[in-house]
Image 1 (cartoon, rainbow, N blue to C red):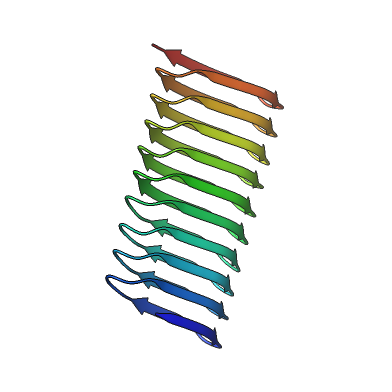
Image 2 (spheres, rainbow, N blue to C red; image 1 turned 120 degrees about the vertical axis):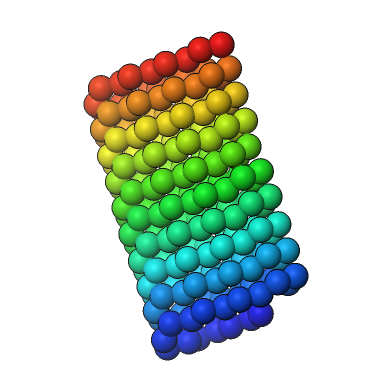
Length: 178
C-alpha cells in the first residue's frame, strides 16, 4: 500500500506487504503484519500496529502510538506524546514534544530530545536517554542504563547491568543488582 497527499484522515489495513503513507493531513491508523510501515508527515495523531516488520514514523502532528513485535521502531519529530510497545527489536526515538512511554521486551531503547517525562521498561536490552526535559523512570533487566542531560529526577533500576547518570538536575534514585 502506498498512499500520498490525503486531505482527511486515513485508515490502512494490510498483511504480507509494506505500507507507506505520506502527507496525510489528519489522524492516521495503520494495521499491518509481515511488512514494514513508513508514515511521514502526518498532520494528526498516528496509531500504527505491526508484527514482523519495521515501523518508521517521522513528523507527526499529534501523539504517536506504536505497537509492534519482532522488528525495529524509529520514531522522530512528534508534536505530542509518544507510546511505543515492542518486543525483539530496537527502539529509537528522537524529538518528542511531550511524554515518552516505552514498554520493550528484548529491546534496546535510545531516546533523545524528549521535552516531557520518560518511562522505559525493558529487558535484555540497554537504555540510553539524552536531553530529557522532565523526569525519567527506567527499568532494565539484563541491560545497562545510561542517562545524560536530564532536567528532572531520575529513578533507575537494573538487574545484571550498570547505571551511568550524568548531568541530572533533579534527585536520583538508582538501584543495580547482580
